[in-house]
Length: 472
Image 1 (spheres, rainbow, N blue to C red):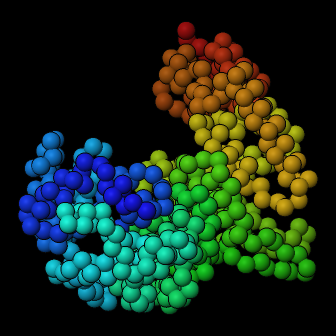
Image 2 (image 1 turned 180 degrees about the vertical axis):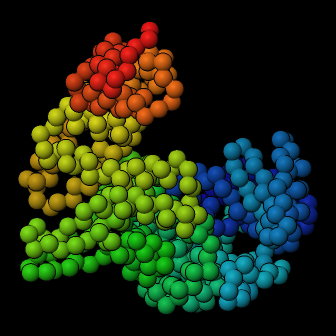
């Protein structure tokens, strides 16, 4: 392979020239070389290591670039970053690292290229391309990273126990790369993750969530979650999921393993949408089943109210992991809370009234909710599978029909509280809410159309029943 071809962008020549001016060696290292070899498209993130000061090199590169970009310096980490032509370049001086037991932040000293490659997490990320004039484009592969790429293996450059114990986030990264690239984690490395799994507790939740998001955004997220469970990491990160694992049996009656079912649902949803938060909803849609599981001699295993319990658990989980508690969390909550509604609809006769209520309650998210519920069909019985999907198709058609006719999505009743107050000369009171609710219910039930005149007439009738007289 001609690695010079990877370095044809003008930025690499300018880095090479700048390093030469400072009498430094410089190399592109890590993901850029890996992704070029894997033909994963044009990388927009480039890591450059300098044998000397990475910050000085960044400033010299910025000086030589025609756009004179601003250099962001991170003195604590000894790194600098600039943007040029939609490419983000990070510069660091080659370094040697040593770790203490209770922190993933290492003690750092200047080092050689070999020292810098030694500290890399995986062999496939320790590949370096020379930017030096004497051997521009030469690949330096001290740990057999090319061979591991060819064999689709995730392996650490040094002893995996040391690599993972030093920086436990690398355990998550190993699983994330295995998921994204569909690679296997080398056996000794996998055992080392299992041995060191409790070390994940020193990693901040924000960094863990970054890796979880990347696993969820992969083509087949179940690969990552199965590895997280197998290595024992999942119990520290998402105990709500491991609580779903296993099948109980009483008097010959069993329920499905909700953990493996959940992973099937996540893979199903990944086929249909790139929406990260809908993927989170798929991952968490059944977490309420563990705390609500009960056995009844009459009906067998039940999970009554698991959607409501699950929606409350979503908030606690997001808060614990320091995930956003804004509209993204509320979206996941709503999806979990409503996850069974279309299923009930699909199993019964699909009435206009039930569809109106579904559209009203789901609002703009009704299409996402339907996608989630369709992904929730994991039966291996082909007849049932076809029947369930046909039923959901009917529900979707009914939603379109009702929407076009009744305009229910995010609707506000045609009569406002202010108009009710003005009509009956009222100050804020309970009767206003009673009238508004009656109008809303009548529209949702189909007793009156979603129109002002019909709503106005109902307001007068309801007001009369409440002993109110119109003054206008």
